[in-house]
Amino acid sequence: MTTRTTNDSAPLPGVAARAVPYLPLGLLAGLGAVLAYLWKYPCRFGGAWNGGVGQFTNFCYTDIYPLFWAEKLNEGKVPYVDYPVEYPVGIGGIMEFARRLAHGDGVVFYDVTVVLMGIALVAGVLLTAALAGPARRWDALWYAIGPAVILCAYINWDLAAGALALGGLLAWARHRPWLAGVLLALAVATKFYPLMFFGALFLLTVRTAKWMPFLKTVAAAAAAWLLVNVPIMMVNFEGWKKFYAFSSERGADWGGLWFFFQKTQWFGMERPGFLAFLGDSEKLNTMAMAALAVLLLGVAVLALAAPRRPRLMQLCFLALAAFMITNKVWSPQYVLWLVPFAVLARPRWGALAAWQVAECWYFFSIWLYLVSQYPDHAGEGIGDDPYFLSVWARALTIVVLMALVVRDILRPEHDVVRQGEADDPSGGVFDHAEDRLVLRRSLLARGARQQPETA
Image (cartoon, rainbow, N blue to C red):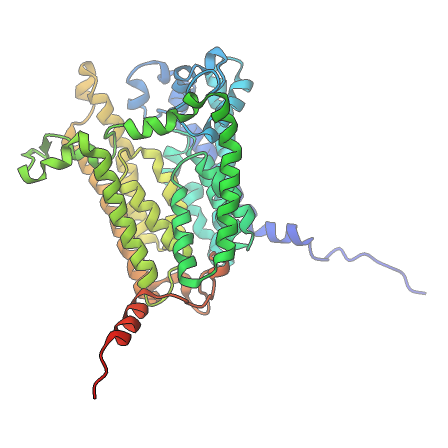
């Protein structure tokens, strides 16, 4: 007689088995979220938010707490409907959700927002690990407990856009273009920068002629963006457009290189006359857009002319870094935009560590610089020269990272992701795709056709 027994050692169900390797990363990301909350202790529990320069000298400033009053959320105003908000509708939706739970309490509003952003951080870390692939999932530690991430996590709502953008790119990597389009559109509706990733997708589509997935992604993105924006536009168009008007009218602001150029003194020296146009506030929008266009044109030429097709994450990183460097403002929390893409583009620790040091340097510098703007506390802060040194240190370390990524594209043997048989693990349809258009080959072929035949 035989008896039927259960096999306790049977493998876990598919989803659970795939999730287990990511559990330690999720826990470490949760730790990073808690550490970021504790970093704000002097403000959240010590009242430094309400004490003038205390929020700067304790390095615990956040936009979230003061905007509860600045955006009239404490009065029960609904974003866009009752009061114009200087952010896209995705952030407005998060504001409204937290407002309803806060019941007029600014600290509760902050806490609710932190919970949401902490969840977004954990999700973003797991998505970064999934995009990196099994062999390199631990590279996502830079996003989970990176020092600059902990310092900047809860300054604003940037982590939400990061999770949506990474989710969209993972959907693309998993050959789900409709979902990719929806998530990327929601990311753009939360922060504008994920729009750069459509350019990266387009360039690789041109090179590989994989048009159908790209067109599906763009169609889904357009529909999703309209779905979340048009209702607000119909209810109160003036309230909806404030973000776009504010972005266009905004002058050079903290952290941006344009802010440096508008200063009359450059590290104790007079600004050279032939570079005076860099400080012209009337031409700022034109100069910023032109500089971005030049850098993106360079990325496009690189993508289409490189001997081997670049990886999607390499192009996403280059496009996003170009957007940040040429932006009119460069807030400290923008580091959250770039960390996962820097890791996915070039997961080598040396240059990443140097960049993180520069970001931390800038984080402390900006708050001390703001302290110096208060006449009664000027002696507690720093002046122009040390502040702008930190601005340039951050910019130059990112430029170095960009140069190293460009080198990896031109000499793929240096790309640690492409070791062995790997091509583009997070590229979706681009992975091991055949090149259909290479700019250099096309130009050579055209030249050969135009060369006159010899007798």
